[in-house]
Length: 301
Image (cartoon, rainbow, N blue to C red; front, side, top):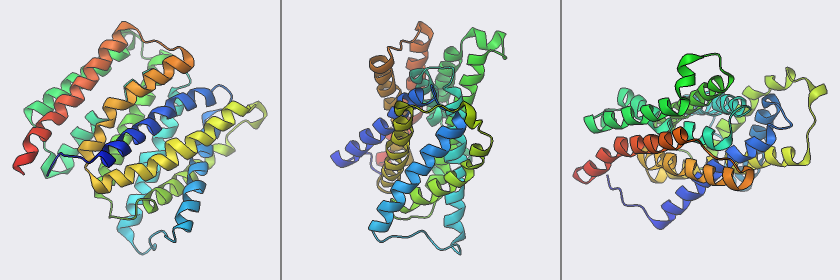
């Protein structure tokens, strides 16, 4: 297994990172006027509709229902890997800023490494990887801060836990995606976004529509989340899954927090405290250590 990547792979990698990073900024705008129970179905339905149109134009179709393995992957990616983290992260972002949420999400590759150790024989934890996990989780602990230990009822702490829960769901998503049967890059995203859209519909029924006051900026943000951070990102992700590896895709954890922090500063003038900066360094160092051993050993395979 080689670690050399083509310029096209790196271009798609950066574009995917940008799509995911922009979600934090658009969610920040959307939650100012809309509840999570509207944002999530709106985002998922918009993404699914766009991808359905592209798939039909390409003359492709979803696998038959008799293809049990494909549909198990589609349902898993749609519920655990998409609808659940979208809800957790969107609710969490009501009380924490976008760049902090991105820092928490950067722990997802650490969860992925632990789950991959339990699931795949070729991704066993080594001492180097374990060091990376410990350093990365130390970064998460620093990010949560001493207030998290002193008061579990703190609103900000609960919000951060919700976002970390979303990161864990994304890790599970990576495991499911690796095991999914190979399909056309657009077919799998169409399938799991359709399932996620259906799973999110009950949220619309518990929404207090009398208190919903959408503005142009919030509506455009939801549409942007659907078209860019969900639809386009889904296609790019499946493209990279087919061409590269989970290890390569996990490197987005290095880039997303940086892109999101830059967007947060220029759009919202968000700045992080010293402990967030230290946590950022620790988390990225942990991810780097966790992946470095695999990259060094790969030529021998």
